[in-house]
Image 1 (cartoon, one colour):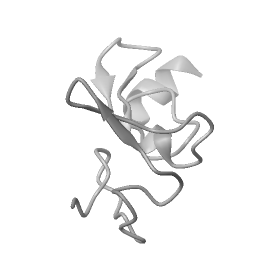
Image 2 (cartoon, rainbow, N blue to C red):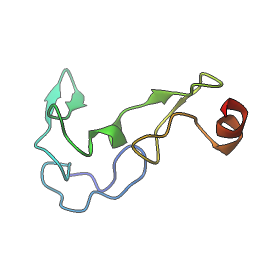
Image 3 (tube, one colour):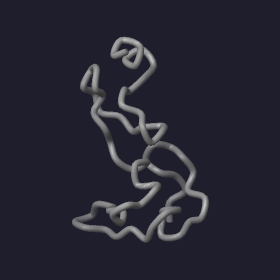
Image 4 (cartoon, helix red, strand yellow):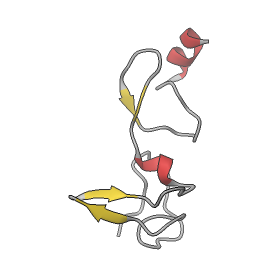
Length: 73
């Protein structure tokens, strides 16, 4: 059982490695249920400004760091 999501947040309930759903594994990849409120913590995003891959710290984060967010806005 894991203790953290890929973005570094702690898994609090430890129920099948997610607080919001019962994920399954498909081809060795953890897959959250559709609509899982905590699923965003495990998926990489591409920064809208520089294009680098990152794990978001908040649900709506679209840029990888503060400098990219400032440049974008």
